Amino acid sequence: MPDHVRKPIRAAVVTALTVPPLATTGNRAFPGRVYPLEVPELPGLLVYTGDEDVQTGSQGVHGHQERELEIFVEAVFQDLASLDDLGDTILKEVETALLAPGVPLGGLKRLRLKRIEHDRSGEGEKPTERMRMIFSGFYQTARGAPTTAL
Amino acid sequence: MADAVIDWAKHARAIVSRLGRPAVYTPAAGVSGSPVTVRGIFRRPYQRILDMAESSDPSFFCMVADVPGIKGGATFTVDAVVWRVKPSPEVEPVGGTVFAKLEKTGA
Image (cartoon, rainbow over all chains, first blue to last red; front, side, top):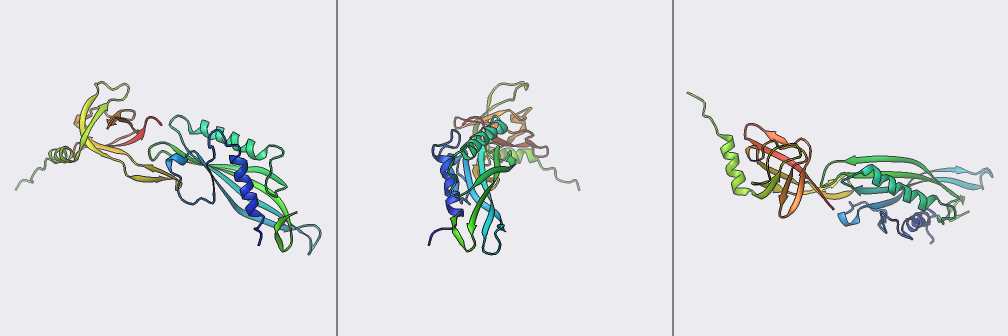
């Protein structure tokens, strides 16, 4: 059975972030990663989907479902000099890779950057930051047919 | 009966001497003194940072008298690797010891 549309959306986001590789994070984009990144995997990106709002479209009971999906791209990185500067560079590269016109996004009709959150720590061998870039992606499916984006 | 006086510094130095290893201590900028070899306990246990990054929690434990004026920015060179002291190393006055958390200085 084909996959829910969320899966090709996630795959498209990972592809956009790795082909071609970004200057800072290279091909280190990890979908669905729950285990800590090792030092050789830094700086790296964690890609995962989150909450989703689903509304029935204007065409009534048998109409389309309009879906707004949270997509998280979370950068994990360390720097001795400036976490702010490195974070801004990564943000620039991710925004460019995902939001430039014409980027294929696996069925999304539109994508926007909604919010950026930061956690940082001075523990460990180097200052470390998790920068969470929260995107909102909009797509549509027919009711009962979540494997096909309209 | 007079309370026994325990020479904690003497005990601490015995521990550091027995269990420690040599390191070159270099004072921070603005602190007088030249690099000197001291003996201390260097540890580098595993640590997970922000739940998603693997790292270690390096530290150096030695006698305060051996590293006068120690503060953030000083360095310990252990096995040819230079580690920088993080701000506010913990000085323990009774035993005369200092516990310094460390960070890397390079890649």
